[in-house]
Image (cartoon, rainbow, N blue to C red; front, side):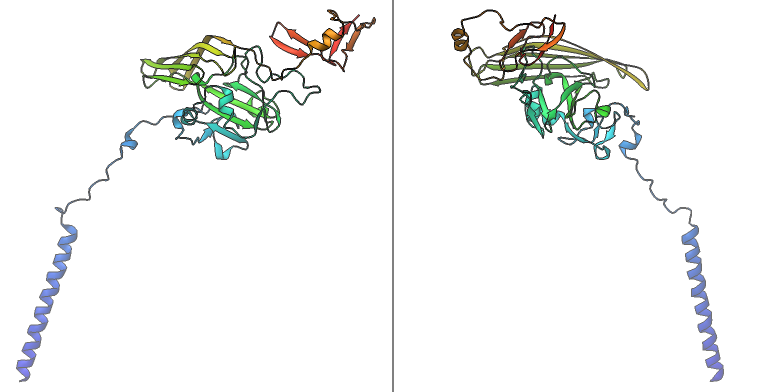
Length: 345
């Protein structure tokens, strides 16, 4: 009996050792099997294979704007900076927003800005020289945050009336930080970025607008890549014919702009633009109709100024109680010289 039990125990131990060796051999084969399939390499995204495009630190491109949202600006620091990092109140008008509001000039665009009002110089004594829309055709004067403000194009002041047919992007920078915005006034500055020639893509766009009072407007935009990534030409044209709800109220203009982009070196791009055109509009002064003929007739219809001129040399003021409207032919503006200085002697 003892012999039988001892033999059974020996056989059981032998079988257990055999199973243990088989299990270890299986694990070794699983680890050292050279035919096991390797992990598939991670597929590279198409973006990773594209060349890196470096943006100029001195230029903000409208192509980077998404809808109404603009990420960068140059108004706060003169460099291409993120709006959230700019220590100034800057409102950017993207191309899509300007297209949706159908703004064609500076006045229509600023109607959608904050803290903007027309400046008719009512702060001066006697409502002097209102130039809401000057006789010389310049843009209407406006205030920002209650103070006089101005407009510039590519950080340079221009006397040409602004039309948005050749403007890519606009930024309204509030505050007296003229050292950052350029030569500005206390209220702030409207910075306009013109449409530039594109070195990578040729395209053509036609746009028409029709409205009340015989309003018709035609715009053309043609960009041609002459040498890929080297030289391109962009032509912009405008024709507008517009009447108003009043007699003899009109605003007609025909303008065109040529822009050239040339990249001689990898890190150097030269932009040149030229604009020419013709404008024909009426004179509008922000004054209500007043009768000053009757007083002149009752006063004897004098055709000369009876005020005595001081004999001494120097300067003296005009009468501060009577209006003295004077048309300056040089700049086409009617001034009220009441209380102003004049040379004497």
